[in-house]
Image (cartoon, rainbow, N blue to C red; front, top):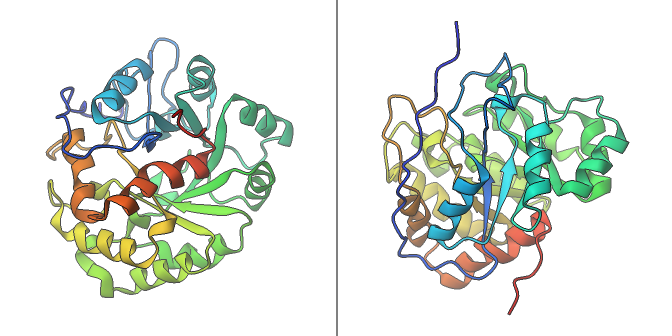
Length: 293
């Protein structure tokens, strides 16, 4: 049986009320296609219509963003061809995070670095066995290159992975609020674990994908207290991402990307802090240049 076609994103993002600072970065987008050139991995849980870099750039321009980080989509498994080709075409606009096999040669990772890759990503087995699990070897090479190591746990799985992640070298980025179940609030053990990880000074959290933490529709109200608590606890180790084009939203209301960006007005009401999250911290983490004055 073929995997389902993931619903498309809203093609008409609203112009947000939030004005992004210069050098702002969307720290997670996925790009796909053309399908005739880049087939989906047989193990993918979904397929997508073409979501091309030109369309992503159009959305970024409407939102007021200058850059984006392409996280190689799970739909492509550990095939980096699409990521590499896109980075070669748009070297100023994008950086990349790659899904890499545990036996990836160091020379290959150095080649990827030259193309603009600045991170590797591991996932919980719950997200698919065709995707890379934690590899101490790959993480060590990534740290030598100055990359981040990103990890996406299954919902509620953070506690089971925390200590192993903290044993890895370099900077760790936890995807989508570390998949903390929003319904459990800030008093749950998983959130306490997340704060402990942040307190090491080596862990960042991407406040993105609120729809991945709750079954609620926009504005995902149960996520707001978690976002605000993270901002109060460690605002200097947060970045933001849209998660465009929002794959695997079948049966749910597709969010509008202008509305998603405007959630930051409630999550991070302090403009100075919000601007650091959107620009300074994101550019430092993924090695984007300072904006031109």
